[in-house]
Amino acid sequence: MNLEIDSPYHYKPYKWEIPAVIAFQKGLEIWTTIHRRGGKDLLSLCQILLPEAFEHPGTYQYIWPSLKQGRDTFWEGKDEDGRDVMNYYIPQEMILHKDNADMKLTLASIGGTSLIQVFGTNDKQYISLRGKPSNGAVFTEFAYQDPRGDEVISPMIRKSKGWRAYNSTPNGNNHHKVRFYLAKNNPDCYTMLATVLDTYDHNGNRLITEADLQKERDDGKTEDFINQEYYCSFNQGIEGTYIGREMQALENAGHITKVPYERELLVDTYWDLGVTSDSMAVWFVQQLGNEVRFIDFAEATASTFTYWAELFKEKGYLYGRHFAPPDVKVKEMVTKGTIAKTRLEHAADVGINFEIVESCSFQNSVEVLRGLIPVCWFDEEKTRVGRRHLEMWGKVWNDILQKYTGVEKRDDHYHAGAAARYAAISIRQIGLYKSTSQGYADNDYDYVRKHSNKYSGL
Image (cartoon, rainbow, N blue to C red; front, side, top):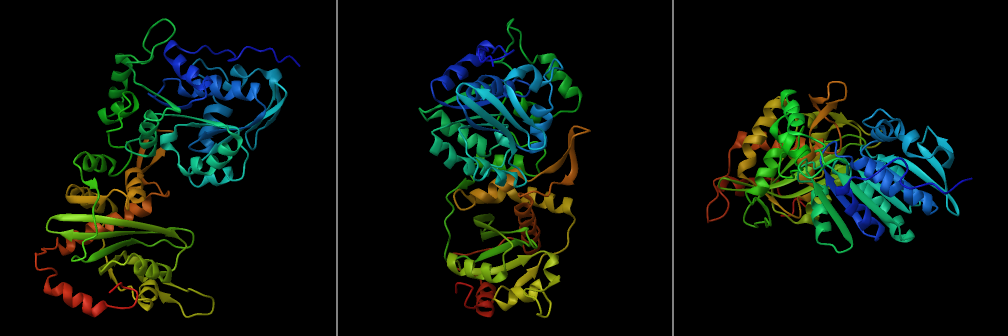
């Protein structure tokens, strides 16, 4: 078999891409934030993943937000000139086996063979990465991935002394932004941020012209979308989310910081109740004057109220009121053979006495939450996971219409969003506390005395 094949095959990097290629060859971890249609996927495939697989036998992962995206864009995808990516950019004589079902590609390499496999991370697809050997991995559109995929693969990369490369367009103030800016200050990493003003073809022409951007506007794309997708802005609200813009404005205003627990103020909790394998999400909130302070967040899957009662005791807060959605009145059995009780009753058995949030349409509750956000403060550390959920909580994307629908996406993020909606509805209903320097109002004292129990932290 002829292994004397030029690499990259049928691909010539643009001049502005070459520094990233050189940095990878020097052993640096690659972080590229490149605008939409900037060619970042072909750069990662042809200059990083394939040359490594040809030159160094091993196991490699090509990781996408979803398996479908990997299949549509790489496995069955075409480039902008209509050529099949798999057929044109990979020498066919190097392919030893092609497993279409699992999207595995076995390639001849110098001194052995290499395996490249496509994976997804969203909707818990990252679990399939667990236990797989890895000599290197490309994470494409990392800002749209579940970052737990990276956490799963990290131990294998360290064990093999392998490499990782990340590419993406921005997706608001999420994990990609955090990791990208950390990489900028890490001497072991190379970072590139390329907007439409920085990218051009082999003849020096811009890849995306002002006329192209105007067509996007004419098609109904917002300036928020254009700034994020083409000018690589991390400071825009995430397109297609419910409160991404509001959360970004909150951070810009300095409202995401250290928010300590104040012992003289009660902690109210606001819940979204999952069932079976769903997550339960809980926000821990204190109020002082016109400030709504989100001091903590917790979530758990398939958990009982006993678990939550013990967690509440462990946190040691002085609790006030607990708010749950109307489905708390649904009956369920905890163990086989027991008499079915409502969730309200199960919770009361362990000392969590719920008040039921008033009914409100989804859209109205979102608007109430948007109105509340400007007076909210979030603890930077304890609410980190919950804030990411709120930033990513969004709508279903329609592939045919190429736009977001009005339907809420039922992923890992919507539970925290629901609990925040219930918080906004309840706070609007009961009003903001008028706390005084003398401590609790008299009605707060009465509530504490009435609901004190072994799990309440009192």
